[in-house]
Amino acid sequence: MLKKFFKVGIPFALLLGFTLGSAGESEAATKIVVFKNCTELNKVYKGGVARSASVKNKGGKTYFKPFVSQALYDANKKSDRDKDLIACER
Image (cartoon, rainbow, N blue to C red; front, side, top):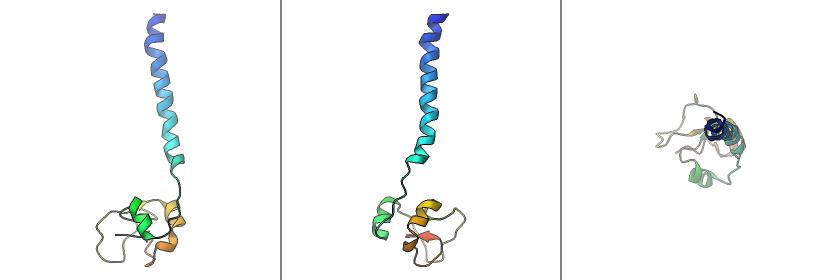
């Protein structure tokens, strides 16, 4: 019984610990980058960056859906020329 625990229980506990530990790290690992211009921002986020999921584009037709991140939008707010809360939409 004890051998079975060491063969199955310990690896399972380690795997569970690594899985739960890495879930919180992915959010913390997201860097807030201030891009120089829209060309640079669109290389990473093709549709631009929206402040929230409920904002609507005031401009014309867009081809890509924007990435939603309040912190990333706030860092690149200067690139939102039409002030519709979506920076560098395409």
